[in-house]
Length: 179
Length: 227
Image 1: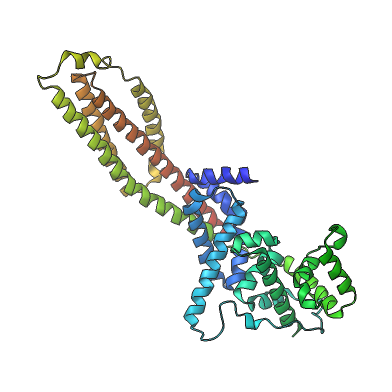
Image 2: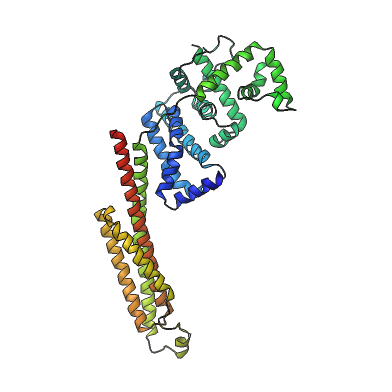
């Protein structure tokens, strides 16, 4: 896997246009989906994915294969998304609430349970209402299927923080989906 | 222990961790015992499992075909800019070397030239590498000419001009070597000009190839959009 990544990265660095398109085709759908769910707008998602791949093209010289190309691309993507959301929040000039708005997480509450049948749309809306930090960890873990150690690598946080963020996201979703 | 102290283990449990698969993991075993008698944690596990299951089945959002075309066009534009910036530098460096070689040759023609210097010089006409350059240049030139139509007129004009400068440098180096075939610096100047020409032709071919790929990609994307 790593060898294939290094070879593909080397081909891209050598200016092989087909190799970079191959990299794009391998990852674009998943990255675009992730960005769509992070920023909630197709237009912003297009701009961000474009920025990610252009930055990847510039930075490939620095790819040493310590992580997979996929993980490396996810890291660039999440940095772009979180920067974008921070910028958006700064523009809104909200006087209250931190970026990750911990207060928005409600404490553990027993029944009633989440309905058996959750519609895809309800879940998408509920995910959109999560604070950015826990939304990022939740999307990477429960939607994309990454393990906590990989999420820690992608988001630059500890494994324990990743677990905690996913837990908070699930709690918040539970509350939102019960309404 | 209360429910909150098992937060991390509850997550692991929802993700499929079981004490039976992890012998010696006393905390997980303790959580499972707690879970068996805690309705709140059981409800959390059930809800989290449902949420996790639904999340894993969410459909992918498909990026529009124009996204790749836009990215490819931006990369191409950047490459062109880098290319335009590189060519004058390479030509200038080549000319600087040529001028240095020519100046040195002129100095060598002064009457002070001694017999020892002539003896140390290389055999006349001994530039074996030159032939390889000529072959590479001929092949690349043929390839570049066959793809010439892919490049826009402005790029073609810049390339033509730079190739003409290099050709002049090569001719002048050869003329200088005809006067004094053993001159090492003149040979170096010639080989450097040939080397620069090879690099310029290689970049020309790469640029033309990339432009072709880009045009094809844009045509495919347009076709896809029209379908």
